[in-house]
Image (cartoon, rainbow, N blue to C red; front, side, top):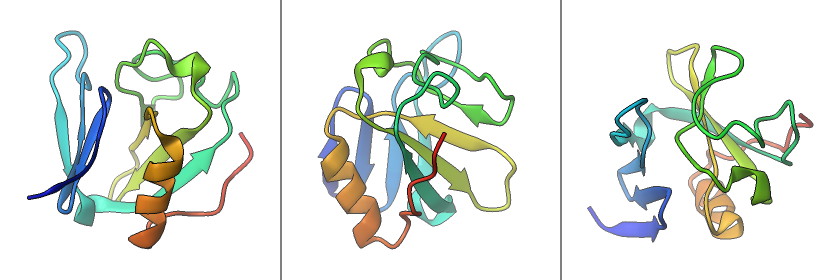
Length: 114
């Protein structure tokens, strides 16, 4: 596996995405194969859209790994998983690079208003 993007929040390889500090309360990482991701939405941060969700869930559907700087981020990503009601909401340090990576892989959905 070769790393195509890495920061303090996520690591993306050609096969998977690793969400750092995913599990509460111990902060274990979650590895999600790219083949399990159905689509990714890129959203503008908003109060109801998760900009202040530092860790956990607000709607019991979307889980956010820990990011204490989330309110300062310029975009929020929401990954829908295949055959699952659950989603993963996350932020990254370089949102344009990650947007481009998901777009190249055909996983990016049109931006949805929050």
